[in-house]
Image (cartoon, rainbow, N blue to C red; front, top):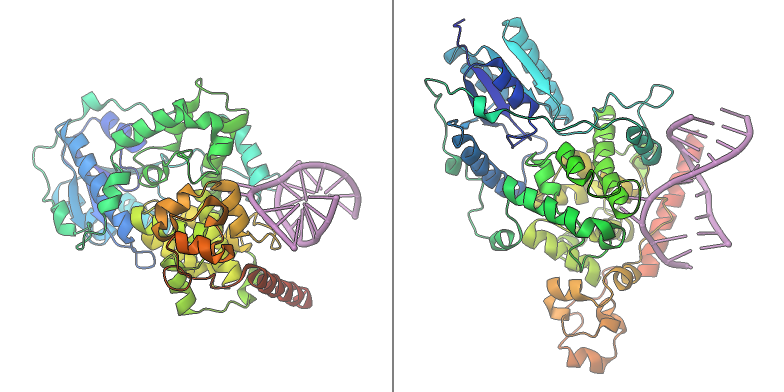
Length: 481
DNA sequence: GCTCATTTGAC
DNA sequence: TCAAATGAG
């Protein structure tokens, strides 16, 4: 091996140069650095349209940042193990560093790659930059993983939080010869039909924009996060989820941005930090129970009497359920690749409870359409909604989308923004157009069943049916025992 | 085994 | 006020 055997720096869901321990290790090694990103499509969870869009821009942004230090981002597509072994051989790589991912298949793949490289006596090391705490570090007193959020997070809060990693980017060394790179545009991550126009209005998928958003959020919204996070008609959430997913911003950076500026022990800031905690918890669960993306964590739910129905699923996907709050959310999702969390809970609840559609179908749709589609968080969210996961909502809690709308979108501005055919309805009726007198409907140009549907399932009836289904499950469970 | 506590609600 | 299962200690 030559004395200057370069370091291969393998980028994955850590698309930033700061607070990047693999990067810092590569710099510290003192050899030329070859950054690479491998487009290796997962067979079970291929990237959805929205995440492909985000990834394209995140990679372009990373290319630009690397070029400031004379570095390139080598793009290769194909099987990760093959691409890496090919690069290692052709470019006499001396070390391979990366930051860890935690999806079950990725763990298996990366472990195999690590072993292979070790057997070739190549230096190889992986690091943590995506989580505050490694999933295997957190255990309850019996040595088992937590299954309930509150004790999990209390346990975490009692530990000292990790600091960001300083990267000495001025000290990077550039290789004499660069490996061939594919062209980002050739990966065709951007949509062919331009359905993404609204994406550009709402998002700036660069690290710098994410940092700006973070700074703004810490300055303004985090103080009233307790109320703001529940209002889809306000701008009260951080909107950092896609940046977090792709690692353009890390949780350590968020923690540090809050530290010293706000009191993290109470109020909005404490609540916001606990949302970062839910992200940690989701990864904890995914790591310890790797089948959760497709299987309910509570085994009795395998026998839940779902009633899969393509028409109902499609009505939900298109935002045609007849419940304005839910439809607004589903259309917001399709338009900008994101939905307010309060509305995600309501949209999920309607699909799973009122419509009796399997939560996995909802999770798949979210996976395809969300810019922040994240296996751990998406899975956790849907299992929570369906009541079949860790720390799930009690089954008898069925959201009433009308009351939720009236409570959290009080004037109906959110509905007006995303369901324009209801825009002229007065606030009193906007969450329940079927209750409006004919004269009000006429004045608002709403023709029920024509311009906007009646609820696909009436609330009381849907609620009753869901509760009955859960009730059956309970008996089945007791019989088995 | 006993006690304590529990993200997001509404009939 | 209600509900009530279950994890954690």
